[in-house]
Amino acid sequence: MAERRVADLVVERLLAWRVPRAFGYPGAAIAPLVEALDGTGGDPAFVPARHEETASFMATGHAKFTGGIGVCLATQGPSAVQLLNGLYDAKLDSTPVVTIIGEDISGPLGGAHQEIGLSRLFGDVCNQFVQYGRRPEDVPALLDQAFRTAAATRSPTCVVLPRQLQEAVVPDLQPQSVGVISATPGVPLARVLPHEMDLDAAAQLLGGGQRTAILVGQGGRGAAAEIVELADRLGAGIATSLLGKPVLDERLPFHTGVLGEVGTTAAAELMGGCDTLLLIGTNDPWIDYFPMPGQARTVQIDIDGRRIGTRYPADVPLVGDAAETLRALLARVPHRPNQQWRATVERSVDRWRTTAADRAAVPAEPVNPQLVLHELSTRVPSNGAVAVDVGSVLYWYARHLVLPPGVNAQLCGTLGSMGCALPYAVAAKLDAPDRPVIALVGDGAMQLNGLAELITVAHLWQEWRDPRLVVLVLNNRDQSGMGGGRQVPSDPSRRRPDVPYAGWARLLGLHGVRVDRPELVGAAWDEALAADRPCVLEAVVDATVPLAPPEPAFADLRGLYANGDAARRVREQVELTVNAEGLV
Image (cartoon, rainbow, N blue to C red; front, side, top):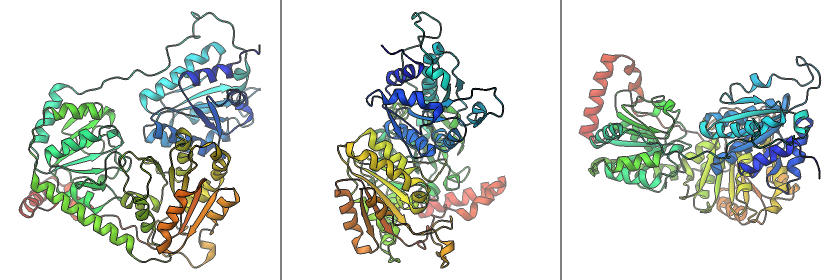
């Protein structure tokens, strides 16, 4: 029998933690572990990306789509540096990822070839856990602690394994030997609930509100029924963060959509008119769109107490799981809905939906990008998943794509890094090969890393039960970096090169559709979603279509709130106006 090496031991720990696959880029310092993974028959599998950055995005995307722990591999030096972007995405969006770095330095430390101080390099992004493996008998406990820390803190962690250690033979130690056997893999689920007195205070505050707004973030996942029931009990309107967009059925008549610069006028109006605010699992950064300071009394629910009050003052903080906490609140909050407020919110939603449809129908040269997402809304498969990139495509997704209930959508919410969508889509597809996946990408992100990662798609797709992975590329040739609404320079040297994205897909053996006429957009989506293989849908769109961020309610008054006396006078006037005219 072949000797059991530490690399084999690592694979055993990944299997024990039910890790289905690890994403990475092979190199000499991680070669023993990659070899061990290749010998497993695919359980767990090693998925090679075209770049270390996309490997880390895949690991983060896997964790976001599955709720599990992502794993990525790389070697020391420049390879390790390339992982940082995807790991910062995981850190800022509270996503568990375990990073395993191989190191191969035979001489003394300090100036060796490709040597980088890995502890310092990962000291911020993996600040909860960065450790080196030193002895074979330490490795099981080290990996278990990395996984347990990642899960408990919902953050990335890092383990550095020298190549010599990966190749070392595992000694035949007894189970009671120190450092050999650790606790059973897995993190026990805890039931986290606020104190009774805090729940009572929150129920009293919410029950006494007249114009209640609920802002839902990704922490509301799994609590949709409770959120809607509470909203009906209070006659509240609902808005979501970008990460919270998939939580609720967006077709609800009192669902105002996404809040913030990328969001809707209805959500801005909801915040501008409320006197009571319930925040559920959100760390939404668009604080300019929150109620003015002092305008709304606030209850905040979050599993992480460190986030209470970081975006808006919380009168009653509730640290706990969203669904459990909401169920406890429902037992306390009286059924006293403000029908007038709810009707006002629904009229605002109706106005926004009419506005959105009108904007999508505006002629453009050649295609209005809003129309492309508008046409997708009626075609998203009910069992599908959506990955969204950064740029103007994010605006059109937030406002124009209505997600069917149950469709999981993920994006790089807090870091806002371009180039995440296609790696996310690959991770989602590998997790559920029978599920159609749609990636929404701009031409900038596609040129950044998408063209290369299509090679990964071409390499993998024939193993998928449902071959549909549709990559929408909004090709607007805008290299300004300023988003929509700008005139594309006439000088070709100042424009983004016009790459034949659909043609590149066909060269790789995939399907490709290019559409540059608005009347053919719907048919192009139908063709892409019916293809017998992954498809790039290249939509040639107008870069001059304005992004048109919604104006925060009472934006011209916000500066006055810096002064206490002025704040009181403005607040009193605002409340009088809202009460007298029923404004949102």
